[in-house]
View 1 (tube, one colour):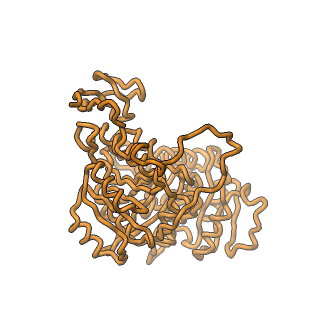
View 2 (cartoon, one colour):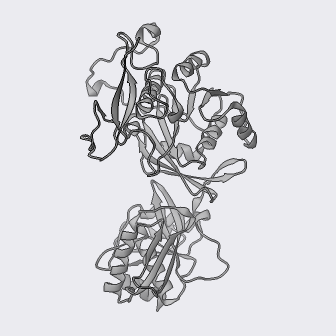
Length: 463
């Protein structure tokens, strides 16, 4: 009989210790160690439940041998289509065989809906959807609401990894989906499902299965109160790709963001609209991020940003009013408040606008969170538009960074930003004069207005 013992694990990094420690020596965090029950493995038993070499016989991969780096094949990893353009984009062009993908998000945001929809969309692929949270009837009811139908999607409600692998042996699926990793339990550990040890063990078993069978595996993960994926931080290091599903549950739009990707870019973005029949892909997000206004309003501008290789035109809304209660407020939604304070200082020092006694509220429409410095000029124009109560033409957009000296600085990938603005019918775009060198502006059906200083832009717009 296996000997039962306890050990301590760090909630942040997963580091193990035989006794409780106030400060983790690995990551430096305080009060993160928790006690868990573990079982000492019997001699001869492997630590991973997926089949051993003896079980596989000749079907397993050959033992690894060192090779010269020049002798290794440099062929691009083959992918197959997920039949979802947004997911293809964030994965880097499609699903990679043998990849382990972790999808995290808040409760009720639509993680299970997204993965069930993908499972139903995949054509000529046998998909096993393993759920430890819902019954078969609940999953069938959700599938009935969707417009996609499939005879190759199989449902299994199970939490034991050993039982899951038995069914995998019989079914031999092309894609495996697990909802969620925190509900799985491995018999190799005595701790409860969702504990640090169990999450690490179950992920290790699934990773071994995915790599040895070239079966792409999707894991759905819960998040904690800090917005990070629940469990040890090592979980994100073990998987190949980490996707974050974001959005307000009370709004229709959802954002699928790449946090880590070993097979593609880490700055891609996918946008969906939550509807009664599932998630709809939003192929042109700029149209939904720009409000259709019935009248002209001050404090509203359009900025051209970039998410990965995808240009987006988003609406920036500002409200500047006299502070009546003590210290003026500085509040932002979707924009860095420290960068806002910097831009306000530039406007006051270099532009001569007295904003120190003003309440300032800034909002990025559509629920997006942006960090692109190319929005600086749009933010500054929006603030002054609200301050002096003069509106900006709805057919003008902005793409430039603002320096501390009040200079208009160049931004990268300007051509794709100009092309997106022209496609959406904008008549003029304001950029830095240092960014247009070498760009053929005649091929764009839009007027490109270039400036070197912030004061020049204000004179052109508000004079």
